[in-house]
Image (cartoon, rainbow, N blue to C red):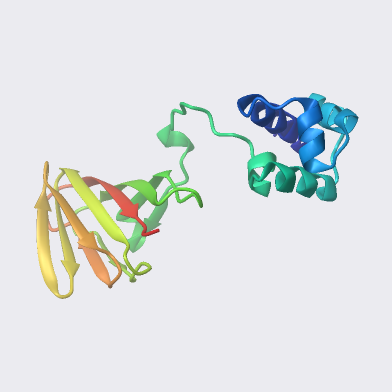
Length: 184
């Protein structure tokens, strides 16, 4: 894992470059000396929390934008690297390909449900929607005591801010993609 001061160095340098700011200008905006900014950017100095706050406040950016490792423009998600979650004695398996992130309003899962597999889900926060596409098999989703059967190639979209259930009502394995979309 990359050391935090090297992450800060990379982020500060990229941010300064993207905003076309000189070392002098960053020093002026933040109250941190030009020499110190240069040392931080080179990874020669580990800034204190106070120094980090001066920089983020002066540049009007979030604290985490300076300390988080930036996400690459492209990332391949390998199934064997995903932590599988399961319910119903392993009959209902969830693969979180794109789990929730604070700055995103969605998460994406792949789900496999063995014949007869079942999951009862609690209400998500108000305004949350689920978008499901079944790629193989058959899925019955119960919302407000109404059953909706979705077959291979079909999709369902519903308000997930109420209790709901998923059931493989078919004769074979069900595979589906699930997107949870959260309100702003």
